Image 1: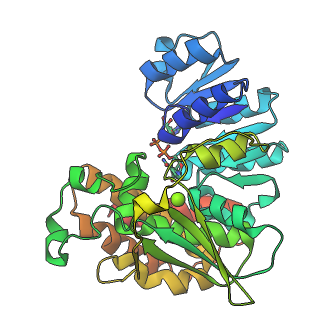
Image 2: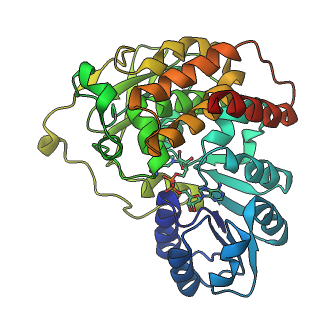
Length: 355
Ligand code: NAD
Ligand code: MG
């Protein structure tokens, strides 16, 4: 298979699953982490490799090294594998998703931003989600007709922080996720709850369902719930470990234990909370964006800029959502009519947000 973003949190876990199931790796890609990429090349012997920029090419120990976003697209065309794991982060993941669809490859999609920004124009029939909540929904669905789908959130790094302290929190505090170990961007997105907003959009495009919501479950043991018409509900319970969704995404027939079973007696109790907009300002637009899911591109582009500025210490934590909401208002009337327009809108929103 092809692994895009092999040096990231999802990429590394995918390689662990590849080893477990004896799957061959045809392509590995990394943005800047040459050291880890070289180790992965030695261990998995891929046919093609892609690194983020031309000047890093010489440091990569491989005969066929491509570079940049174009390099990823080239390699997708050269590779014979029918399965692509897209574990890139951010808008950069969209073009590879579109290219893989064009090439009729199956996509194990961790890059939720592809659907958040372009969902309206992305054919999801060959996509299997690598996201614990959507995997949970898929697991629960089982050909039954759902009434409502609910995904859970951990509440992120600041779920218990007094509200008046939020404006002064630091980067390392924001990166200290209570339950999951993930890449920087998604960890910040969890602290602001933007990640859950993205996942509602992701669920909308994947399952084509109107009734969707999210609640906080503080232990991240329940990942998804489905309400049925008869008044009953099911919940998907599993240890917080991405290897489970990844295992199903790369190898449909799972017959062995992938994660440690949850011992409910040891867990003792679970706590559920409502997601409130006084703590998570972005939640203000939840209902509106579910009615206007084509606006995902606005939230994503503005959020990418704002998160970057926060990580550069140029803005405070609360400014991330403030800036994103401002862009959302400014571009609220935008109606993309094609995937090409998504790229134009993305650029415009970035320009506005930078200012
Ligand atoms: P990460 O930051 O750990 O890894 C990102 C990978 O993409 C790295 O290999 C990096 O080298 C590469 N990359 C980054 N920017 C790039 C660019 N511009 N061009 C080419 N390559 C680039 O991120 P992650 O936590 O593994 O998340 C990856 C995706 O999966 C994100 O969309 C995230 O929302 C989603 N996701 C992650 C988790 C998780 O547990 N980590 C869970 C669900 C969904
Ligand atoms: Mg998730």
